[in-house]
Length: 361
Image (cartoon, rainbow, N blue to C red; front, side):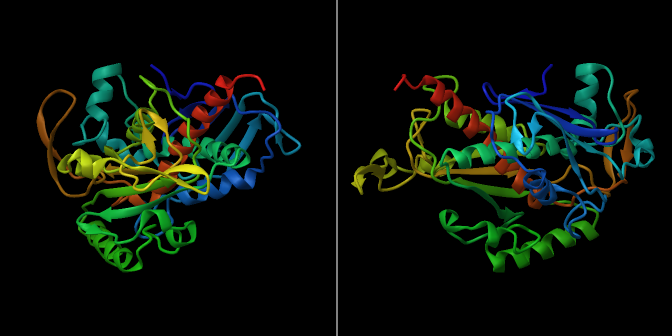
């Protein structure tokens, strides 16, 4: 069993939803990278609970502590340890789940795998585990910026059957943060707020899609066979809680095209090789081609809802469950910084691998 991700830039997350805290060890970060705790905190603030009526009411400041690997504002090249202590844990609220499996949650599968589970919230299956990923992703973003890689911008492009109408390549961070839905289309965002709040009041939940664009990614990142860039991106994003689908470029829509329609013709722009279209989503043959990397990730409706559902208990008896506790009626708004973090972790790892491959100058 492992909770580690990456090769040269490697992260290991730890902690449970209602334990003492959660955190991450980042190994392989280059030395002398300027790093302020405020840069990490700003990303965690985007992920934290209690931001609006669209998220769980759990109140956590998610204040990060850097325990190691940074000295006088610069990374040392040694492991960077970061910790966020749980302050508003209420494990007693989950006592009714001790002997009952919540539908579509990880309760039964954890028991099946380990023979034991932490029934206090979601344990390691909780989205609270992603604090470590977002903190590590903030460091990855800083490294990428210093190497000239552009921003990674994700936004909510669909909630339930409401779809945003905007060009993903033109979306800015300011547009994303202008609404609690983190949707860049203000008209769709207003409809999304109504839909999420209606689900919340009904004790139900909704899912949707996050679209992400990584800008100014150099050509040459990725490996040609098993560690294809899109394969590592898919693994990273499908490891997020509640994720159920991944597309890059044209995705499944490309299956409706002929090759003559789907191919991305090359041309020269300002002396540089570019493609006229980007149906490949910035990756060809498992390697980045220098175009923006365009991704879409589907997230299911939150599994824990207040509506009564059929289930079984740990003894195998059929029963019903109406879940209590504090849960997001829609994971999408808080998933945006998680998606950005995982994309940045993949990109920085492949960037360092590519630099290690380069011949001596």
